Length: 213
Image (tube, rainbow, N blue to C red):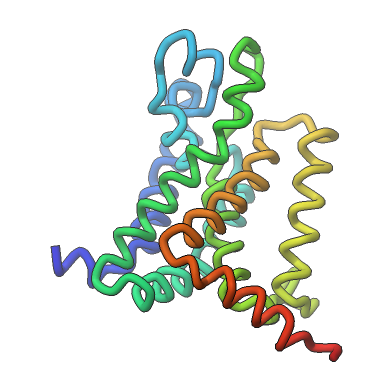
C-alpha cells in the first residue's frame, strides 16, 4: 500500500486512460461497449458504463486535451489532497475522480434513458472536477489560454461553464458537455464536504486577493 501511495495517482489515471482510448481507436466494438449509453444502462443494467465512459475518447485531440489538463492540474490537486488528508490523500483523490465521472453522466442518464440514439464518451466531467478544485484552492492563480494568453483561473472557470452550457444545447457530438458542468460542481461539493473550511478559504481568497482592488 505504501508503494502505491508513493506513485502519483494522476499518472496512473492518465496511463490507463491513454491505453484504453488507444485500444478503442482501433476497436469500434469496444468503444461502443464502454461508452455512456443511458438506454443500455437502464434497460440492460449496464451500470459499469457510468465509469468506463470516462476512459474512452473520440479522437486524439479529445484525449490529448483532457489528459493535458489532468496532467497540469491533477498533480497539484493530488498534492493538495495529500496536505488535507495525509497518507490517504491520493486514494481520496482517486475516489473523487472516479465518482466525478459518474456524477457527470447522471444528468444525461436521467434525461436520455429512453433515447437509444444518445451516447457520449470522455473524461471531461472528472477533469472538470479536478480543474475546479484547483480553482477553489487558488482562484486568482494565472492560467494560460492556448499556452499564450494569461487569464485568472476563476475567470477561466466561469467562461468554461458558460461555454459548456452553450455547447450542450448547440453542438451535436459524442461529448457530453453537460458533464463538464456537473463534474465541476461535484468536485467542489465533494471537497467541501470532506474539508468544509476549504469553502470559506475560497471565499476569503476570492475577496482578499482580488487583483483590481
